[in-house]
Length: 156
Image (cartoon, helix red, strand yellow):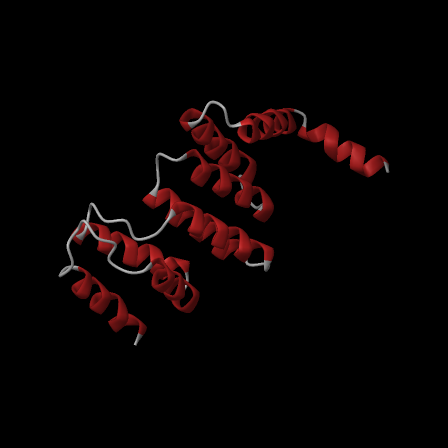
């Protein structure tokens, strides 16, 4: 059923004027909650091929859903939601900022470098983004003095 749903939604959307919202935002949120962010990204890519000028969802809605998802403990799903926001709104600083924050929460291999790269993109888009400035200062210093932090923790 899941494999059938995406093509059907895309076919239906092709009959609607590109000047309109194809679906109600709440329907897309339901789609995300039922099938997950990875399927939503897949759907969004196909949707934009057919409807390049249409808006499927509000940036703030997906950003909030991402943070709600993270608060429930599913940081990987939240990261996928922030990736969806970057795909839809690549020129908005907050999409990059939220993605970087979520990467920091998750941790893992090269997470500091990934976060730095995304905070830098956020700052490039909005030089007034104080959160990115503060995070970059801390992260770049952490990276340079990482061994000192480890030593401090061992001394305790």
